[in-house]
Length: 68
Image (cartoon, rainbow, N blue to C red; front, top):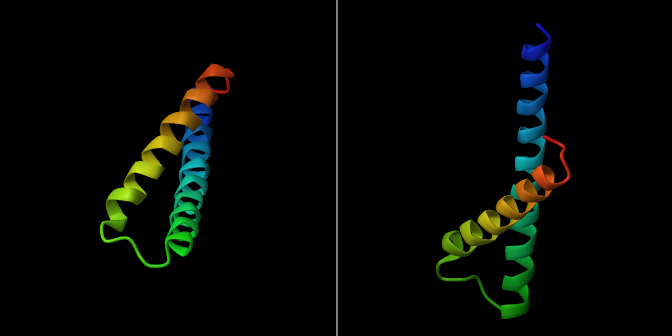
């Protein structure tokens, strides 16, 4: 029972972090597009790269700090 509760909390934390990273990636891409003056031709590729970098960095930091 305790292990199931811990597992469910990990899923909840993962979901919250994933939503925050998605939101941050969108804001970063929008800011870059405003500075560029127009929408990027391959916006989804840039969005994926930003999201990938933020995800890997964040989950590395979480593991490094021992929060998982």
